[in-house]
Amino acid sequence: MDVLIARPADDNIKAGRSGLLLISDNYDAFAARVLAARSAVRTLDLMYYLWHDDHTGRLLLQEVLRAAQRGVQVRMLLDDVNPRKSDSAYLAMSSHPNIELKLFNPSGIRARGIVRSVEVLLRLFALTRRMHNKAWIADDNIAIVGGRNIGDAYFDAAETNFRDLDVLLLGPAVQQTAKIFETFWACREAKPIGALGSAADIAHAHLFEGSDAVTGSKLLNGLEDRGSIAEFVAASDDVHWMERVRVISDPPEKVRGWRRRSWLMKELLPIVRSARSRLEIVSPYFIPGKKGYAILSDLVGNGVGVAVLTNSLAATDVAAAHGAYAKYRKRLLRNGVKLFELQPFRRQPAISVFGSRGASLHTKAFSVDDKTGFVGSFNFDPRSVSLNAEMGVLFDDEKLVAELRQRFQSEISPEASYRLELKDNVLHWHGCDEGRLQIYTHEPEAGIFRRLLAALVRHLPIESQL
Image (spheres, rainbow, N blue to C red):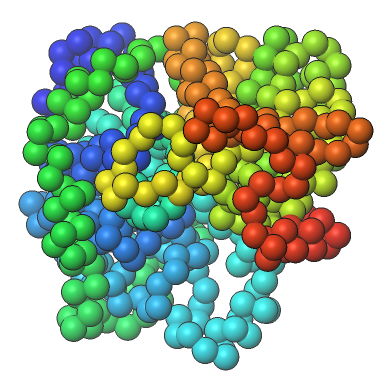
């Protein structure tokens, strides 16, 4: 066992237990990835839906490149949905002898223009199916799995930042994560970037060489006091060791519509239905559909307390998804489901790297009773159920579930979220601003364009694509 893991952890791992550490703070999430990359000595395996070309995206690419220059074998698997103007940075990265980079379900036409637009139209169904997985694996000793992509908004470096959640894994759960990575890396949908474009242009190598000095110093200065990733973990005092942990995933064949019995929802649905006292769901894009609505209503009818936290229209980054969710609100409230919507501004005491106040929910998690919890990339919406490949960590541990529930209670407080209520068939939003109770009867703090878009989506037959 490497020095990455301290002796108490080593004893737990030998006993077959996995260590789980929840990472809710955005800067801690950035620090954990940097320190894990710096501690890697053999391998660094990364799989992400989005890797933005911004300050934190470039800083983390720098850390990956430095690891490769030390002799670490790096493999990067990125979904081809990434918003880049060209493949130059990818090609420059993959030109390093210790870096392999693949794109998942890529378009065949790499150059922007009419021809690529035609391909998108011809392959519209196939190209809507994406790899939504997120995993950062160092030396098969440590893994970070959860809801965060790579980009400023996930690490408190943007004007509006996501409230998100990751799980840092130690022990056997890391090997489970590595096995999922290997499955996706070897699948036919994962194409080497070199097979899709021309040789790397050295003139474009600067595209992944960091951000401006001021931003970089703000993000990296605090890392010197954190030492190694082992010290980061040891300092937390919140690692939970347990035997009942599974890192689960859709198969890559999901993008072809194959192996329905292996889809992630087949694993999660029986657990949701097993609730006897309490079900708490956090999903930034919550579109239950007729089946989900019926399941939640049945649970309430059987005496289960069901509560859902999602984004308000003003807080969401996908107004169309909110429009599809909105048509279920009154029905859910009538049947006893409690609904909460995150407010668009930080009103709880919090300090981000750049002092931003804007907030948007991105956590994907749920807990059942006081025993089972899940954190991952899975949204409770049709896209996660039927189109995207998803993954996450499923665990049975009362103490970790209690921590997950504590975070849920904090997020649904009046200072953080609106509580929805239905009176005389009219929706009311209850919130708190600087200690003063506020009640709204229209979508609070949402602009007219967002309201019009959300209203339009309610009447369009596109729910299955959201």
